[in-house]
Amino acid sequence: MRRWSHRLIVCGIIFALIVVAVALVLRPRSGKAKGLRVLYKPNANYLLYFVARDKGFFAAEGLDVKGIEMESTNLMVQALASGQAEFNPSNSVPALYAAEQNSAGTFKFLYITLMAKGRSNNAIIVAKDSPIVRLQDLKGKTVGTPPGITSVVMAQLIFKGALGSWEGILFKELETRGLLQALAANQLDAIFAIEPLITMGKEKGIAKTLVIDAMETYVMDPIPIAGGVISSDLAKANPDMAKRIQRAMEKAIDYTRANESECRKILAKAIGIEEGTANSLGVNTYWKLSEVEPEKVQRLADMLLENGALEKKVDTSCMYWKSK
Image (tube, rainbow, N blue to C red; front, side, top):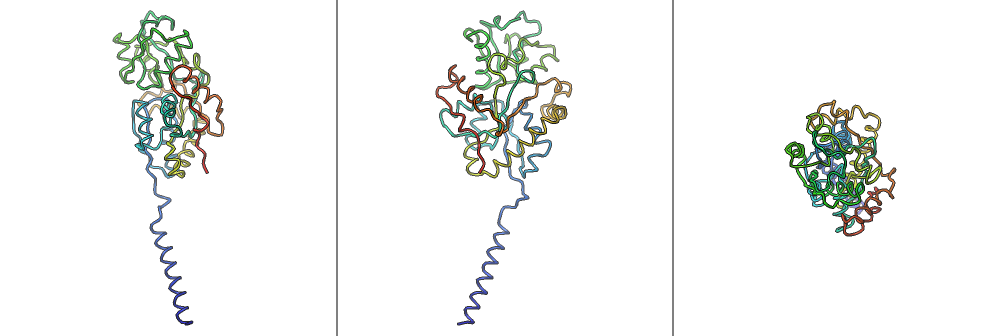
């Protein structure tokens, strides 16, 4: 009996060692990068993503980034919700809230992007030789916007803040690359423009600025216009990836705050503009989750509801990701 007991003990130890060895072989290797599909647009609002990518902050977190360029904000929201991508570094909130109102708890913020006066990258621009000198002159005219609900809604709120109503103004969505051409061809009377379109219009002799800092002047200042967003499904299924993304982006926030000039060079390279052009662009500011002023985030959601951009109230307090 003692001999059998001894053999059983030995076999048990050997079996345990085999199990441990197999587990060590089959476990995911911490050194292997995890695939991360990131949605982006080639504009200044995605600066933070370009910084995190080019400075190696994603790689340092073991994330292998695949960028997916999209023009439409609406399609970006759909792609994130359906699992076609894991992360949008600058998801505009009007489109986000429009989806969230119908399916609460779908998205989570990792940080908030702000536009503030003096650091803005939005404006109402008109043709260089246009006789229009005031926003009032655009009554009965056509204003072009980039594609997606965000641009249209924000343009409407600008005119409501400035004129009391956007009635009588036609808003026309066009692909960003075609907006300046349409303005030059007199197919548009003005554009609600996001950088680098404002600076490019000036450099090409096509456009001049009618109102700079339009959103901050007539809607809210600062305005929590976007945020780094993941789906709630990803947050639940893969909190480790969510944490890695957040760490990488917070490193990018810190780097941007300390190295604005260098970040402008990164932006110029990323979106294919001259460094001189990039130097004239406004650089957004950011709130890490520990810095967020939640009442301002909620205020914008309520403003969208009051102005008919939303049908239901969105509780933004539920949209912040909380790591465990």
